Amino acid sequence: MSSLHAAAVRIDLHINESRSLKAKRAVLRPLLARLEKLRISVAEIAHQDHWQLSTIAVAVVAADSARLTDTVETIKRIVYADPRVEVAAVQISHLEES
Image (cartoon, rainbow, N blue to C red):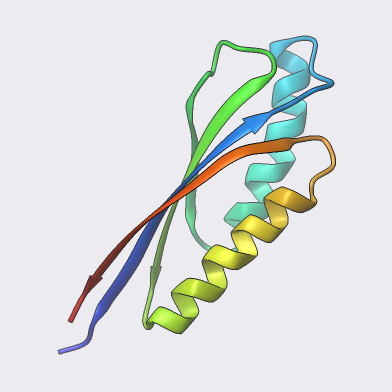
């Protein structure tokens, strides 16, 4: 039987230049789309009604712990690289069963 390696990543964001919900969506849509290209689940889970705040959650499942770690690091790299957002916090919860 194979092992299960999964992680949930919560990322709190501040979008400095946003002055409306429309401007916020214009920043978040491409960021979430870029993350979805990694074949993971991603969604905004909090602060939907705030112009400059967002919390996104990402769910990752991988065949081994090395792949899981690589994917989580790629997620963080993508988010930190976006100049339109400031990362306020990142929380990672792991689930590993063998």
